[in-house]
Length: 297
Ligand SMILES: Nc1nc2c(ncn2[C@@H]2O[C@H](COP(=O)(O)OP(=O)(O)OP(=O)(O)O)[C@@H](O)[C@H]2O)c(=O)[nH]1
Ligand SMILES: [Mg+2]
Image (cartoon, rainbow, N blue to C red; front, side, top):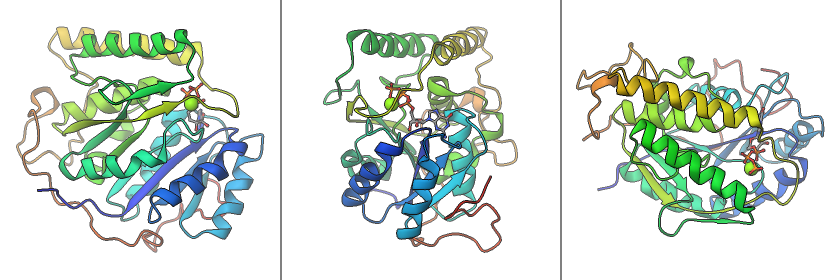
């Protein structure tokens, strides 16, 4: 039977997404009206942060976390996760701002989370699809996935996917302070850590559509980081020292006392997560990073 999940926070990192943000949030709230949203903006020169503040001023479901400078996708998500952990959300969703991750797929992902700890919106399982990508982009993505799957031995078809839903417990137990990866590598890193921690990871098919507006932040450095890190982790795995290190926080060991190196295949009974917190106002009073306006993190 499906386990309860709780209030949903969708974290949306933005860098120069001014033309995309408003239509994306409208689509999201048409599909999942109860979802709270946190926009994590890295001082976008195009004014995305100011637009996000304006939207937050009009809609109590929307909050904004402003960061001083562009510091990468992984760092933006980690800041968003920390913000979520100071509040009572039961589910944290990752979603790009460029419309590639269809909000219309979110209900199916949330439903799947009833029997999983991490749900990946996947392009490469049956029913999944990529639209409007040039052939070289798709082959880069498929090649990166095959490489990661083989090097790390993970049974996930789309390990670099950025559209995800986490149960709170996953983010609470993983040692997020040890995560330094950005870009694609961040997605691989988080998947690897979740699997090492014995969490149940499930893929749900999505149709991924390449952005129509704005510019890509993908770079050779992002691809290079993923290639290098996966090679390191794969080598470590062959030497029977699986990485990344400290997959699960020491302070909060899983009930079965197995460390990340001998993770159980799947958790039988995940601990209870926060349930039924109100979506619009779950913040704790003592939190100093609240930002439904222009507060700087
Ligand atoms: N806050 C923040 N957001 C970022 C940063 N880099 C990228 N993003 C956001 O992360 C999401 C994914 O970035 P994209 O440029 O779409 O990267 P991608 O999806 O790999 O590349 P494309 O397929 O070309 O779109 C978008 O919402 C970006 O605005 C960053 O340094 N800081
Ligand atoms: Mg994109």
